[in-house]
Image 1 (cartoon, rainbow, N blue to C red):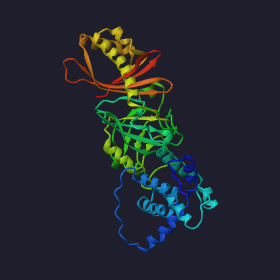
Image 2 (image 1 turned 60 degrees about the horizontal axis):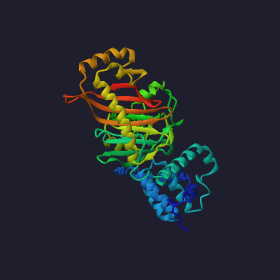
Image 3 (image 1 turned 30 degrees about the vertical axis):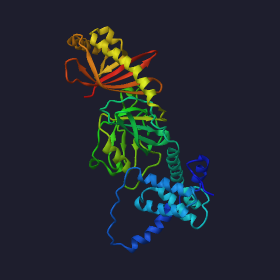
Image 4 (image 1 turned 90 degrees about the horizontal axis):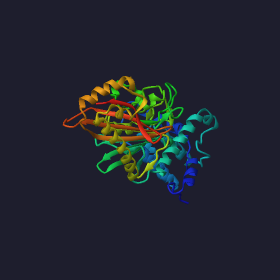
Length: 419
């Protein structure tokens, strides 16, 4: 009887239960004599690895097992672990396929009881990783849908990243003239204690809207960080407003001994396999690439985000008109009492704003390259980025504002110049 794991989640679950974890022992036992037999052999050239390639091969092996084609699955698994000896999940599948040649496997992780006890945590983590990878294959985003946070992206933001921590998945988008297009997605690991970071050292990954702030040279990093690192701006002004602490949240790779890490294995960073991270590093741009990290992404049609974007655009244009009017009181009505800018309170900033409005003499301003990103948890917030160009000028400062909904009104609680 042949099984199609993609058509029946229940059959897929039963399929995963027959996969075991004897791989580490069996593969090591097979590899050891080969190393002794050819001690002077030059190391084979490292194959060029494309992003997502190893996972695609693993999924293909799962499909073959589901179709009872275990010999073909074994041959492909042998090639996969040869190319990626540090891919522990692939070793898991390979070991059970070897075991299947001798006897039926008893359960997921079919190793001696003493080994299962000592390696219980690793077995559990590998099971979870396998289930998450297969879930991401079954539960694909709807065609042409986008995460609800991306209301509007400026053409300056050529790419965007969205992370669904419940699925251990990172989605990479290209910002095309027709809108966002999903171009790749990858398995990721997050904090040991999950998500919703609140303080330094809590081993959690933050949730929110962030931007890539830099691209760290891998030569300056320890091997632990793998192919490189992309820091993000945690804590952002919304985090700071709520008293969240911590720093050094990066998207980074894995050490040489690991192809991927367990779903919850980091100190708070988001970790990818090195080939996947390298693709992202080659693709995204520093400072203009947004990174949304959510417990669960809500995928919506582009028309839905366009409607929300238009509604907020009316609010922002009202702010622009207030600034062009030169009316200080009208302008201040758009800001919260706890608003800050460059460390100044609204009372400290008001005289500066009055001078700025006077210099403008009521001249209109143009808002160029607008981006709106929405984040909703305990409050409804908006991260807005734009170039503020006075009429008659060719350029102006690039600003980022953080807005919060208070009843029926949107108010600004942070504003800063970023370029």
